[in-house]
Amino acid sequence: MFCSFRLSIAAMAAFSAASAVLHAGIVETPGCAGSTPKECVTLALDAMGGRQKLDAIHSVQLDIISHTALMEQSYRQAPFITSYERDKTTIDFAGQRIRTEAHAVWPESDPHQAEFDNTLIATPAGGVYHSAQGDSPCSLADLDSTRETLALGPLRVLGAALEAADLHYEAAEALRSTSHTVVAFTWDKMPVRILLNRFNHLPDAVDTTAQFHDFWYYWGDVKQRVYWDNWKYTQGIVYPSNEITERNGAIWSSAQALDLQFNVPVDEKNFAVDAKAAQQSVQQKGWARSFHGDKSTELAQGIDLYTGSWNTTIVQQQDGVVILETPISGTFTQGLFEEAKKKYPGAKIKAVLSTSDSWPHAGGIRFDVAQGVPVYILDLNQPLLDRMLAAPHSIDPDALQPSPKKPDWKIVAARVDIGTGPNRMELYPIRGASTERQYMVYFPERRLLYASDTLVINPDKTLYDPELMYEVRQAVEREHLAVDTVYAMHQGPARWSDVVLLLNKTI
Image 1 (cartoon, rainbow, N blue to C red):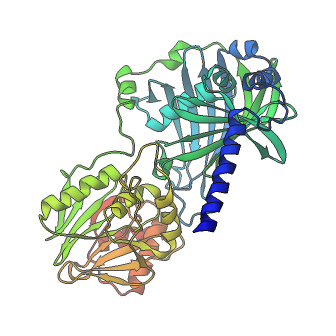
Image 2 (tube, rainbow, N blue to C red):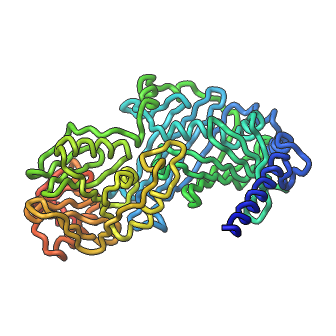
Image 3 (cartoon, helix red, strand yellow):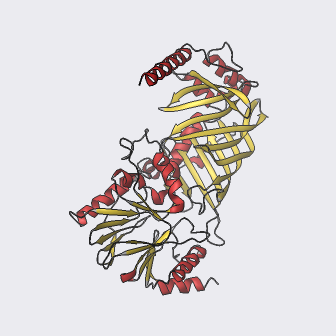
C-alpha cells in the first residue's frame, strides 16, 4: 500500500510537471525554435508559396490515379483485395464544391463488369451522383470527404490552422526519420494535427480523429493520418502530388495526381444538380439506419426471414429465440431485438449467430455484447471482432461505450449444434479459399441452408461470383447435408437444385 501510494504521488508529480511544461509552451519545435505556433504555420505557408498565393487559387483541376485496400471486403484479410480508380477532379474553392468523374475498377464484379463510371458533384451542404438517367443522392461519406477536401486539403489546411482560436504546439514527432514540429487545433469539433518538416517546413502529414460514414463507421473514433509527398513546384506553388491515407495505423488508400492545374475556369453547367436529390443526401442516416420489420417471409414455422439490403432471420426454438445475423448497425440491431421480443413475448433471446467478418455484416455485434447475449462467431474472426469491441466510440457513443462488457463468444471451429426440435441448427465452417471467414447454418428437419454471404442470383439468372457457391457445395457434400432450400445474406430462398444447375452452367 505504502509503496503504491509513493509511486502514485511520483506519477502525479511527473504528470503535473509535464502539464506545466506544455502549458508554458516549452515543447520541442524542430525547425520552429523560438517561434509561436502562428509563426511556425506562417513558415509552412511561405514554404508552399505564401498565404497570398494560396488564397488566390480559386480552383484546382486534378488527374488522379488511386487504389484502395478493401479491408471490409477481403475474404482472407491482409494482404487485402484492392480496387482502382482514375479520377478527373475539379475543386472549386470559390463555389465550395467538387466534381469528380471517376472510372473505377472493382475486383469482385461479375466477368466483364469490373469497370464502370461514376460522377460525383457535391458541396458541404449536399451532393449527387450524376448520370444520364438523372441525379441520385450521394452518401454521407462523400459529404464528409467534400468538407475535408475543401477545408483541410493541402491548399487550405494551413490557413484553417492560422485562423483557429486554439492553435497550439504538441509534442514533436519523428516521421520518416525526421523530427517534425506538431501544431494542433480544432476544426468543426474535430481535432486536427499537422506535422511540419523541420528542414523545409512543408506539411508532411495531417492527423484527424473522427467517426466516419463509410465502412470505417464500425470502428468508432478512427485515427486518420494523411501523408503528403512527391511535392511539385507549379505556378509558384509547392503542392503534394501524392496522398496516402492511413486509418488506425493501416495504409488504406494511395492517390497520385498525374497532372494538376490551378485556376482553370469553372463551367457552371458541370455543377448543375437536382436540388431535391442533393437535399436528400444530407437527410440520410448512413449506417446508423433503423430496422423495419415489414418485409418478412416465413421460411418454416418459427423461422422468419426479414429481407433488405442485409437479410436477417429470427428463429424460435423450445428454450428461446436465436437471431441469425445482426448486421448494419447498433440501431438496426436494437430494432431487430425489439421485433423478436414483440413476436415472441417473454421468450429469451438465447443467442446471436454472426457468420461473416465483413464489417457491415457484423455491424450490430457491439449491441449484442452490450445485451450480454452469447454470440456464435467463426474461430478465425475472433481477433478482428475483439478489436472491434475494443474500439473507442466516444464521439458518437453506442450501447457498449458507457458500460463495456466482456463478450460471451461461442467459437465455431467445427460442427456446433444449437437447440432441439424442428428448428434445431447445425453450424459448419465453410473453409474455402473465398469463404474461409464464413460459416453456414443448416436446419436438418427443414432441409434448409443459410449460406452466409455466398449466394446472389443475378437478374439474368446467373450466379454472382460462382466460386462462392462452388465452395458452399463442397462443404455441403463434405458434411453430407440434404438441402432443399438455400438462402443467404443478400439472397432470398431458392431451390438448392436450381442453384446447383446455375453453378453447373459455369463449368
